[in-house]
Length: 153
Image: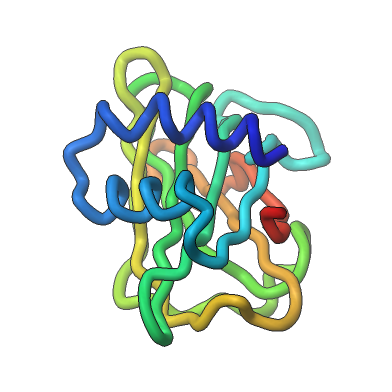
């Protein structure tokens, strides 16, 4: 999984103007910091009009701080999606990891998006994590995809 994520993130780092995304991606690609990563896929109930595919990485970014990096590579062009980090595995949405604001990814004309969110979390951290991506446009709150995060080797 790591070589695939490296290739995907390396291809995206040059096209984004977000400094936090560039810095987190560069650190992740250098394997110099603790990181968790996962593949974003539609929910088990099946794909729908707003389903997304892509990658997610959670990268240590200093003491008590991490950056959640989202790359959507297939989604409905022009749609916007909120994404949030949770404790546990996909489907267990009881405990959201607190952030300052809801992060939004807006898909371009080709259905791609890159976004980053600051998270107050020390890595490595015990337990498991997942990221939910929800539609925030026409069908607010509909689960568009989820990624279980795992340690990168």
